[in-house]
Image (cartoon, one colour):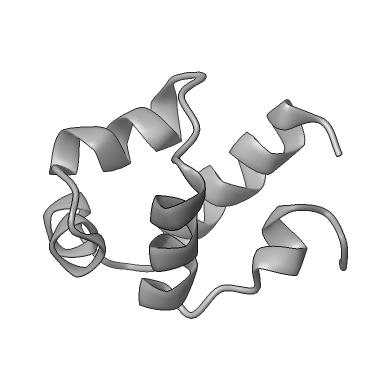
Amino acid sequence: METNTIKQRLSAEIKASGLTTVEIARRVGVSSEMITQYSTTKKLPRLDTFARICKALDLSSDYILGLKD
């Protein structure tokens, strides 16, 4: 899957979560600025951070990575 698609899906799910970037950041253990960067820049999270984001937002990593629709 293309990085842009992963980025778009992750960004959409962060926005759709209804949580603030501060709350997501607290759950994930990163700064709110990092959550914002994952949504608005080309920056992607490290693998361990990605896993924590998926867990915090109850997301399927397979969906975000394009392995499932």
